[in-house]
Image: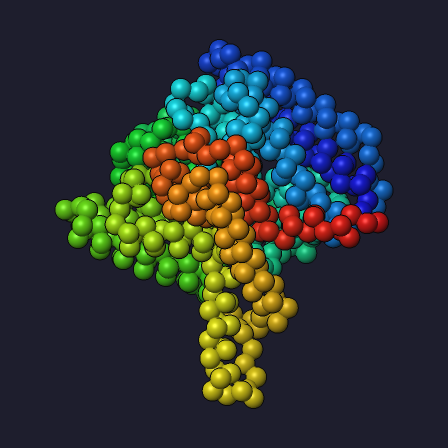
Amino acid sequence: MKYNIVLNTLGSILLFLGISMIFPLLYALYYHEKAISAFIISMIITVTVGILLKKLFSPLQPIRIKEGFAIACLGWIVAAAFGALPFMFAGTFTNFIDAYFESMSGFTTTGATVIAAIEGNPYSILFWRDFIQWLGGMGIIVLVVAILPPLGIGGMQLFKSEVPGPEPDRLKPKIKDTAKLLWRVYIVISALEVGCLYLSGMSLFDALTNMFGTMATGGFNPRNLSIAAYGNPFIEIIITFFMLIAGANFSLHYKVLHGDIKSLFKDKEFIFYCGIILFSIFAISTELRLYVYKSVFTALRYATFQVVSIITTTGFVTADFDTWPAFSKTILLVLMFIGGCAGSTGGAIKNIRIMLLLKQAAREFKKLIHPQAITPIRLGNKTISEEVMRNITSFFFLYIFIFVICSFIMSALGLDMVSASASVAATLGNVGPGLGIVGPTKTYALIPPLGKIVLTICMLLGRLEIYTVLVLIVPEFWKK
């Protein structure tokens, strides 16, 4: 392990993060808020530490696999720590555990909050809370890859360590160019959503903060009632559409923006993703119409929004789905595990892994009938290697194992079974709202401190897809 490379790159991340604090500072200055000093102090501390790390530790060699994993994991841990400073200095929280939980929830695009009264906070704090989601959505490490000078083979190591999915798409020969393209697509679609929301009647502040939550599939919102506060079906349609986009592979969006619309219909994962959404909407809206709402339109409206919000792991809310019938809640809980597509800003297991696991199960049935047959797993015209299938299978079982262990821990801390399992599913899948005491109309404020630490770890594991985090606890990893 070459520590100088790791610390130098962490310095670049902190330098960028500190400079980013100028945006909420401008809001604080405009509204003459007390949080002005909080952002100035936080900015000075973050930038100073970033500069010191870059000056004291000079990278002499390209980043290897070990350094890539270390930077990806430590980058999020450190970013969340320094991102929590404005919350502490502004008095939003009285203890660092809550501030760190909120910051990690933002950067990992989880959207689980411990703030009880959101609308009572300064505009600058609410802006920062949503803005860090947007930075974390496409990936703060990917952004560093895009803006840093050439990193040799290191750029690819960082890219692979952070981008979700079994195999990250490479749009250009140079990984630095791929990172730039992904961020350009991210910015273009983000700008389109801001324009649509502003034209629908939202203020610019609300349009920006809701866009941050939508495109990052984060779910933080400047209103206590989330999207339900607006009570506007047109706004819900806009946000639903952009959540759907954010939950799909951004490489597809790049192709579509360059005229290759057919790529959407050729992509097996995207078709599978849309199929699950349509089935879930039909099933939930049918039950809601029978037992909850008198109008088909009302049932379809709320079912559509919540299905898209949950499967994309955004976590926006237009209805208290914790009061819905058990069948509908079960579907939403399953969607928390499925999540978005590979290469999207969504979390959880990912549609492509679910698809390939189903194909593997089908292959096992065929082998029972034809033991000697050679039946490779294919995705479209591409044959999936056995190595990738082993990785996907082990990832799935590791994901479920962590879910079970953490659910037991949360139960031991006093949470009921539903709340314990839902809180872990919602944080490990980077969804945000769960069921029970962490339901859509509640917050994570009642979770005991140790429980918040466990769920914070779940957020990090979910965002970096487990292996990137767990590899750091292997002693051999740190040997030179």
